[in-house]
Image 1 (cartoon, helix red, strand yellow):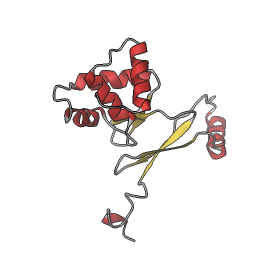
Image 2: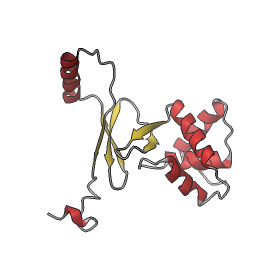
Image 3: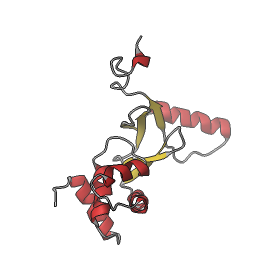
Length: 155
């Protein structure tokens, strides 16, 4: 058995403590998600895992990701295309920057005066009592904006 990352090992122990067997296919899903800095759709996870486990089932991917989300180990990323993806959950209150080209996810602090000010303004204008928020910003990471890689960014 290959050595797994401390994060993946922690996730597997958490799954087992919550009634899920650590099968080889489930382990592959955990290792793939725990090691990714990109938001991955269930189908992408399935494709990545199938290269190693030919008998991988898409249902296993969905069930494992669903359980990881329920346990707070991964978080859902809503993409402009409507497709949902998943990334390892951040510690504390964080927001997401998501590259629309490569899917790289970068976290930034949720403790931000500008965001808090916007929430106060929206609350005052709408009459809502805002209890929480979830912010995802989409654009292109520095690597994807390099003109050599993407001619559309030639200036």
